[in-house]
Image (cartoon, rainbow, N blue to C red; front, side, top):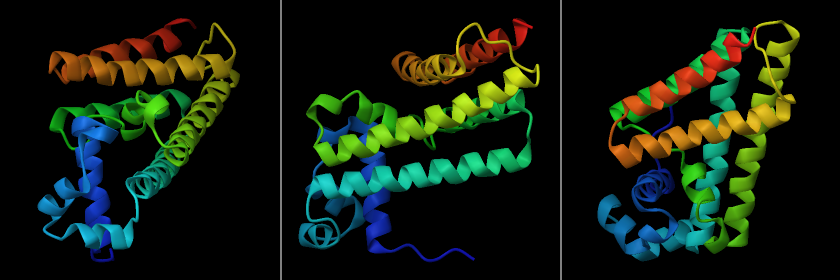
Amino acid sequence: MSSPSTTADDILACARTLIIAGGYNGFSYADIAEVVGIRKPSIHHHFPTKADLVRTLVFRYREEAVAGIAYLEEQTSDPLEQLRSYTGYWAACIRDASAPFCVCALLASELPALPAEVALEVRAHFRMLSDWLTSVLERGQREGRLALTDKPRIEAEAFMATVHGAMLSARAYDDPEIFGTVTARLIDRLRDRQ
């Protein structure tokens, strides 16, 4: 049974949508107040500053990602299938516009201008994702399912950068299929080296 949405949850959901649409500086509390149907002081009650709001958003986003990865690992132990499921999740989100871009990837492009506490959370997300991808690639190499040409950590960083770059290409060309084309080839290369 899921708990009902709270005002804070509604504010965070709205902020997430606005960040995906325009980045950290692309929205204000006035924008959130209008969409959520509350007054700006109500937002300040939950999140005194914009940095508090976005820091909380990124922290929860990372928690969601950790839960999603745990679920993915419960579904299959095959490293190749885990990579396919991970990119498949994003392909579906981009195709149906439910989550057309990773919030942390978007915020990473703004790191020099972000408040320190937000930047810290964004970096933590990337470290978590890199650690998971490294573990998948190490296991895939050990089991003979993946053929790596470099150390697993370097391959993980390249994989992550390619996935986020494919998101950017899909957005730039307004063509969701580009994401799937790029990431399918990425996974094929890992498999084809065998």
